[in-house]
Length: 493
Image 1 (tube, helix red, strand yellow):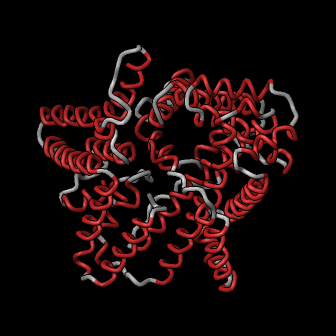
Image 2: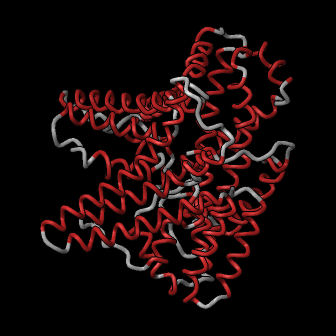
Image 3: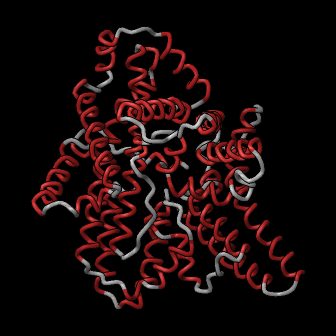
């Protein structure tokens, strides 16, 4: 959606209105434009957003009002919280997977092109539903006060920059910024420069890196029987960077859009492929989701407070839910189970190291750090095969061919190029991957996000970045070729 001409026109118009209007109308303007944005994507999504917003707004108020009464009120508050929370959870997990389960049983279900599917699973529902569940839980626990300003709450639920694919925001942090919006200095050159850095880097990651990698990945996954072990392993590696560049690109664009209006969204990535173990990976990857699962699933289940077996059971539950949230089908379930197994195995190993008097992640040598990162990356890449394949059968077939097809990479090139993807694409994509990893390495070493890192550079460096990035987007990116821009991967979740 962010790569469409509609969005460019939408953002320019909104920014102009926001810049010129009186400060007291800013909240209303962002709310109105956010709903227009949602309605443009899908009218069913807009209806679902409005209904969800009203339900959660009234539910939170009722919970708070009941909690302020007697013990009977506490029971009513608990029942309301359970009803609202499980209602969203049923749509998210139950309804989302019912068509798949019925199909597995051989029963005729709603056709793929039926509008009923769009109504059941509206665009962005998975992201704002998690925000709603977390908000209801916090109000019930007394950690958060129920929002009394409906317009502010509607903007929290439907803010256009985070609507489609997050980040998953916490209501308290976001609402404070909404209520302080009248005092935001619109023409703040420092903030606008950070926004420009985010936007340009986001579009670079999406249009130049992710979409260029998609050309190669789609071809290899479409016909794995034509490629040898080297090409199939390369396809899996390329997909690891495609999904990262795609989702990180979306997040950077969302962060940049929000900054234009004085809103700071949560960082969702922190150089994830620099992780030295699977726990470290999930502290860096999709941070808003992993922290949400920790706070609203893992800890309420008991976390690590009820013994080792319970801790590992809770870990597996969290990752199974994570897999189910990402999509229906056994392949997503296996992806979640794999990450659960990785986490359990790492903690078992770390526990043994601790008992032996050696820190699991202590002062590693450079060589040790390199191999720890490589092992983590390979484990994550293997799991991505199940994430990318269209079914569990195709994922297992891809892995089998990757092991058994032998090594003859030169023989695969003619067939590869006959699909319209030339070897120059592979060379360019490899160079882009190295560039992204180089930038991530600097950000990781300096413990800074890219937009802040760029602002620390001299003016000549910043302007060179602006010019070169814009040129690359139009010359090397998809807009510079004959291929249509890919839809953001995480829009389907």
